[in-house]
Image (cartoon, rainbow, N blue to C red):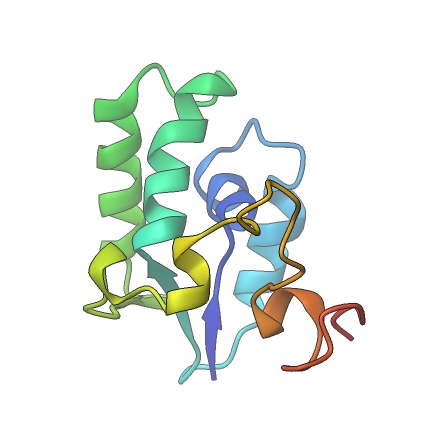
Length: 124
């Protein structure tokens, strides 16, 4: 199984001073031999930016070093999920944050707001 870690889980795993470090390390130790941890551009950038802001890292350079070392670990193995999509590939509805009159359009990403075509329902 591959587990995509969010920014907070990455921070907790890399920083012993993080309040969830022990709990995160314990979870990682229980992973199976074939399990992998994954990052992506968003989680890596969040890690590098938030580490220094939260005073977990002395600066961006050290955050980059910590994340690189973490990803080189063999137990568990890490993978980086790529998507090759940039802002040029945004769907048309994402190009305008609201209706022309300034009111919200009610359109949202189906993953965040519920099923496609049902923007009022929360994700479950």
